[in-house]
Length: 91
Image (cartoon, rainbow, N blue to C red; front, side, top):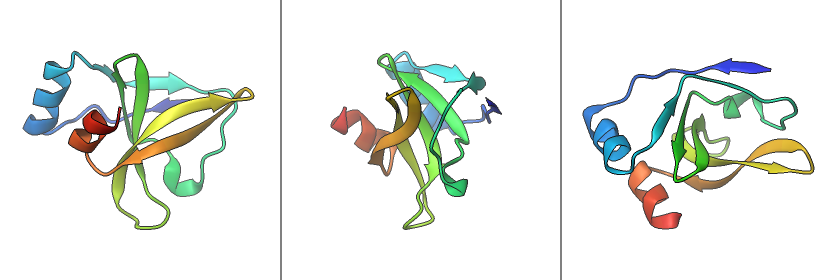
């Protein structure tokens, strides 16, 4: 399935993107994935060689950043972070 993503970021987010030389991803094709309805990626960045996506957390209904991982050929989200700054500290 091909996901078309939002590429609008706040000034603070753009500073983070520039500081870490991130790539803004406008679309991504994922063949097999296990996302809940809320976990549909809204925005994706390539941060230090890792794809991170903004998703809605199932438990809190808040937007969070999650690491896109692949296990046994199936994509899923792991490593949930509340903000990009928390992501920076966690990775």
